[in-house]
Amino acid sequence: MARGQQKIQAQQKAAQKKSKMAKKGGDHAKNIQKAFNVMCEACKSQMVNAKTYKQHWEAKHSKLPLPAEIKDI
Image 1 (cartoon, one colour):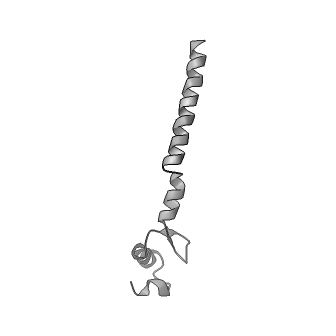
Image 2: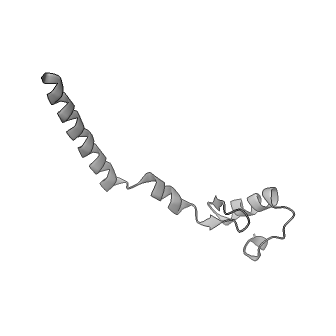
């Protein structure tokens, strides 16, 4: 029955580790979502900043006119 006890201890240890990670850094997916704060009007892709948005627009949507928010960049 030693293996049964080891299994229970391993589960408890994993649960403690998971709760510490949740308190420490939060959900990784939520943190990534916060980093992407610019959304493309045409394809709804998310970019980190306006400079990458302009590069994306010129590469992917070159036939469409530039949006007013990125014309001056």
